[in-house]
Image (cartoon, rainbow, N blue to C red; front, side, top):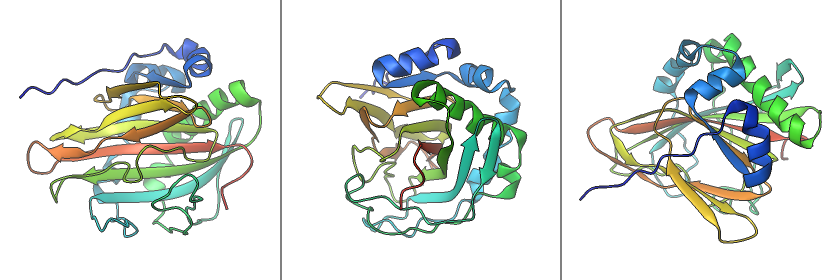
Length: 244
C-alpha cells in the first residue's frame, strides 16, 4: 500500500508575520530559516550531535520509553538571550490532560549546544517575530529537545493528543527523521473544526504556531528499518512569565 505524504506550503521569510497573523500558523523551509536567522545551514547542523545523547523521559504516563528529551528556559529581550536557573517544566491540566499538573524536571540542554552562536540567533529571530505581532517585550522561552524512537514499535510525538500549550507562540523545528513513517503535523482552528495536515521531512523546517488560535498534534511514527527516530526542537514563547 502506498502512503501519500503531504508537503507543507512554505512561507517566504518576509511574509512570515503576515501569514502567521492571517492563518494562525506558518511554515518556513530550511533555506527560509537560514534567511530569517542570517546563518548558514551548516551552523544549524552543528547543533545536531546533542540529540544522539538525550536522556530518557521517565514521566510518560502511558508507560512508554519512546521519548528522550532535554529542557532549559531562557528570557529573550530584543537581542539579549539569558538562560534562567534550571527549573521544572509545568503545564496546567487545562492544556495537557495527560501530563499536566505535575512538575517534570528534565536534564538541561548541554552547554555545547546552548553556547553556539546560532542558538541565540534562533531564539532572537523567533522572538522578534513574536514581538512584531504582540508588541516588543521580554519573551519567556522554554526549549525542549525531543527524540521519539520506534524501538518498541511505535513512537508518539504528542501522547496527549491535539492540544494547546498555554503560551503565546510555539515553534517546532524538525531536526531530522530517520527510517520512520508517519509523524504528520495536524493543525486545527481553536474556534472551529477547520484544519490542515502535512508532514515535515526536511531538517530545519520550522512550523510556527499562534497557540491562542490553533490546536496542534503530531501523529505517531512507525519504523521503516532499525533505528527509526524523529528529532525536533520545540520552543515555546510566553509574554507574561513562565507557567507556574
